[in-house]
Amino acid sequence: MGLLITLTRRRLTQAAAALAARDPKMALAIERVGPCTMLPRTDGTHFDHLARAIVFQQLSGGAASTIYGRFVQRIGREGGAPTPDEVLAADDETLRACGLSTAKTRAIRDLASHVADARLPLDQLASMDDDAITDALVQVRGVGAWTAQMFLMFRLGRPDVLPVLDLGVRKGAQRIYRMRALPEAKRLEQVARNWRPWASVASWYCWRVLDLEDAGGW
Image 1 (spheres, helix red, strand yellow):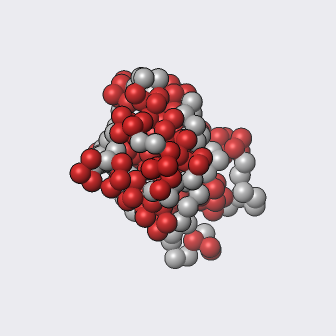
Image 2: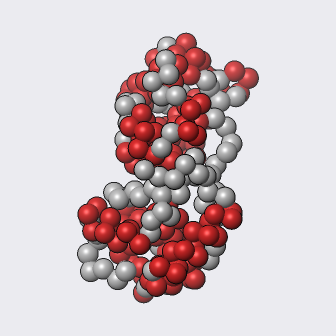
Image 3: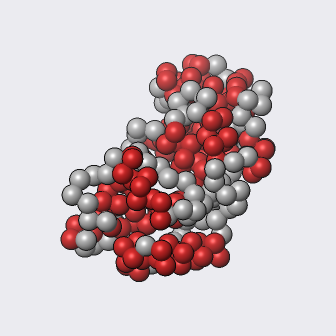
């Protein structure tokens, strides 16, 4: 269960200090990368954030942005982000005309249905723990554990999320800890014992070390 708090600048500083004090190898990564900037994204609605995540799955950024732009313009009112009711009112042909595949059309419609009938209580997420939120999200077609974890980290700002199957986190951990092989989920969980209760922040540093110019020689 994650802490029911949201990451702020103060908490990011606190997290980096705690991680560095506990883990010398992570401390070096923190020193080289610099301050963590992973503040939660507060623009738009939770529904819009999740719908966008579905649109962007397995697509390049440019193509996904184009499709998402059409989705907003054609389904939302006056160019605003579509609401669950607006999605449910649109027929499949209209959604497909935005560029959505059949699978994504079904996924976004299923997301709207879960929100509309409160199976996914978006207005109550702040009072729910990470596991309960994940359990509710993965019931939606097209939303898996990774998408739920990204929502927890980047939308809700939950501090202790560990995306054990994320390739970037695994590659970053491999470099930080000089592992010979890419760590599997179990190995990463062992390493992450030192990251709790700030696994989200440590994961962010794993991603960022891959951006360093000399990351290959870490």
